[in-house]
Length: 97
Image 1 (tube, one colour):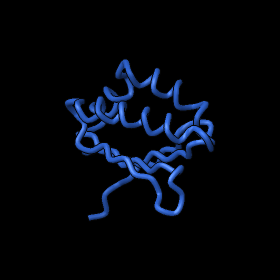
Image 2: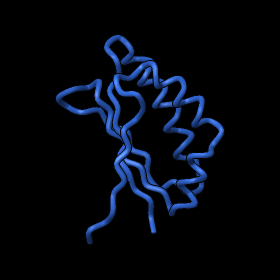
Image 3: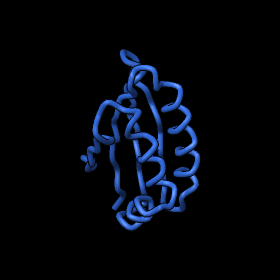
Image 4: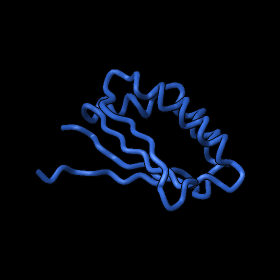
């Protein structure tokens, strides 16, 4: 079964350009993962500092591999001081139909 989630965070005021650079570089790496199906990065129209990332992985194993990728920890360490939340807020999704 596919593993699907939303990751959300808000860039701190003044950190917008650095967050955009970080997430852009990270997205390129994640999209190359064998088990990644989608890693779509959006900002909210009403608040361009608010990010919404739609992620889909082939299955639980692919998601676990993503979590263990060597670039994930450094990305999160660099991102955390630049966002308003303590960390990305993850919402896991189940298909309805």
